[in-house]
Length: 428
Ligand SMILES: *Cc1c(COP(=O)(O)O)cnc(C)c1O
View 1: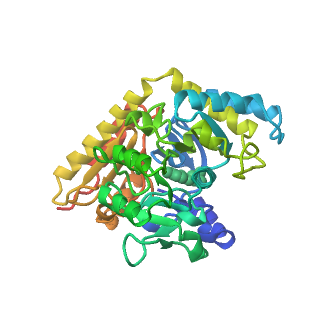
View 2 (view 1 turned 45 degrees about the vertical axis):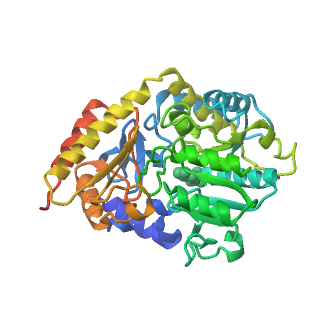
View 3 (view 1 turned 180 degrees about the vertical axis):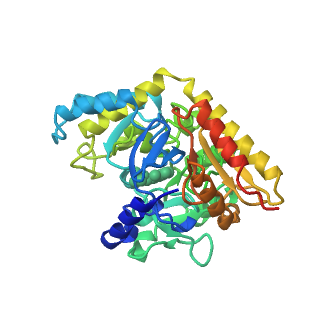
């Protein structure tokens, strides 16, 4: 594999951008090599600047459910571009997209468009606080909700107390109102409600956690979160930035039949362009300015080019509901190959999969939360990643990320991927 042009670009990049990247997940530090610089992508394939071709399972970390540069999406984007890039005034496309989102996810009676998932979550939490008049929120260890100050937290030294910043530059006072519970652990949530009676505005959760690898909610966990929030007059926020339109047209809330009070979206909703959205019950969303007292704004919010890509992407998904079963089938073929490989090894691999989200953990433990996720042997993952890359399969360059299957992955792509998995070196 020749990566000389990528390597040269990387040398320039590290001098001008921190780590040579504009988002840390793009760095290849965890797998011990320089990142590849991408020139173009089409369908299931991604091409680096040295002309290497890969079957891509990162899919831009989630947006690419239709694969790259889908013809119909590109056509809509081109049309939108020629009509003007931004107006700072309302457009018909914003109405169409928000109506479409609300139709697909009925819990989102009212929707506000923003420009990223981070912004959506930050704004949803502000809205929940404004609505309830309370300051504290509960988040789960290992769930990621973007990089806003109050959510970059880790558990304090005494577990189940106030969180402390997990990033330099975040004042302690900004995380004082964030409480940490453990995913799939009802008692940890109960305890926080008991210790903070009448003070919790909301629980925010990834209904399927997909930022500590892929971790599924155990039976009854999401139902429990719905119940305990109702009992305590707190709101339930589903962060569906990854799961929205990925587990199905109605996201994880449709998959598990739970109605959250607020939902945040990102990634797929922009079809590859920058959009985020938050929404929920009308009564709650009417807290948002200019109707209500919760301030939130954005120069490029509901951008006409981004909404064009989003509308087309959601339209295609809506008109092809069978896509979701096909994605699940493809993912299960990959899981079978990983499991087959695991059988040939002494080391165990645990694979978590739901629909088009897959993660293989190099561990004996069933992965049900952050603690069990980090029991995975990351060196083993790095080795696997590098071997797969050499075979033309582009996986996430870190263990704790999902493998994303797209509609564009063909039978042949999946077959090639399974063959690659089975031909990786097996250490006994
Ligand atoms: C990616 C992600 C975010 C942040 O979205 P950005 O568009 O990267 O700001 C928030 N929540 C979840 C669950 C995500 O996966």
